[in-house]
Length: 440
Image (cartoon, rainbow, N blue to C red; front, side):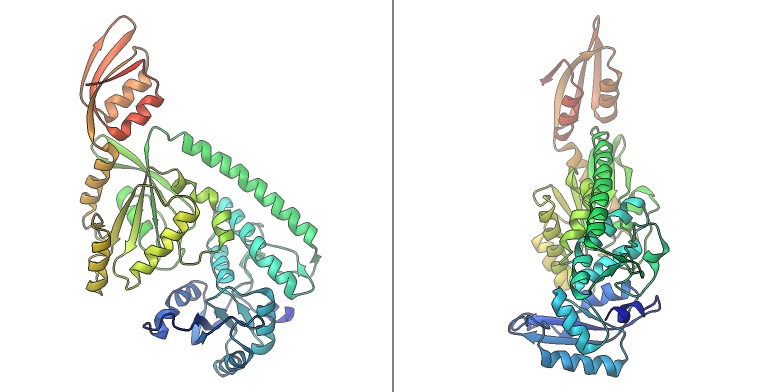
């Protein structure tokens, strides 16, 4: 079985997709839609989809997940289609992968291993590579060691070697060489990765703390919903954009002037999918820190997708997992100029009546989005009189930037400034420690 995976190279592998669903579930959904997301994931990993195999099951078979009879039928399909790999839209145990590979005689991947593999190929920065390698080691390695008598030296996406880019789907990132490595060495590597990522976390938190004077907005959404396109349209950030899942993994933060004199910090984030591996969410904590500390979330929804509600649910699940489900959120119905299913679009608008319909690609309603965000930044207006040290240039500069209708009166060593501010700007004003704030 070990030789089987070693033989796979970087050529496009022929894949059979497998979906095992409980009886009664998806009964009104055609088979193509059941594996629609897995198809997109597999194609993002470079696979050529040659067939699909959908099995309704009453219970999960502990040995092969789908049962030995269906596994033999799958093997016949694999042989007929000359497939190189079988990809399950389910998470399999190490024992199930081992038994299935004996029957189908090609490599078997589960959903989580496929997603980890995609992340390994997309990681560009040191931070992303470390995070991917940690996730792969914690998820993939324990499974492989149970299937085989050993796992050779780890050359992960963060290992800084060419091995991270060699092999077929599921072998990139954490890979094999001829040198045997034991659990102690792998655990040591995991400890090192966690230490390095913890250092990144600390630097990230210092960066975020240094932005405390700004209103922070994080773009979230299902992968390929148009987040990076929106980021570029609003800030000219130059974020890489491609029509594939997980095109970008790294967070970028840019200033966005929503109105004259109103600047916010806008951050793009990694996209979400349904059943995102827990280890991946945990290891990408530093990347998701921008979302955790945001004042407002812009939830970008692909309004042209017939699966819009399912995608929204997937994003909400991940947001809940990282503790962001209660944050202030503005839903953006992107690609609203290309609506294929009006009924779905109207239903989403009904559920989210305050959503803003936009097109990040054409610029449709981006001015309305900016106006809506500006109102949220202000959060309602009030008139205040601030007493501060006359030498406190930082506080005075802040008031001149965000305040309206300013008036100043100087005394010996103090200055009194009257201004109209938004409710949300009071928090930062208090951080600047004026001598006194009076509400007029």
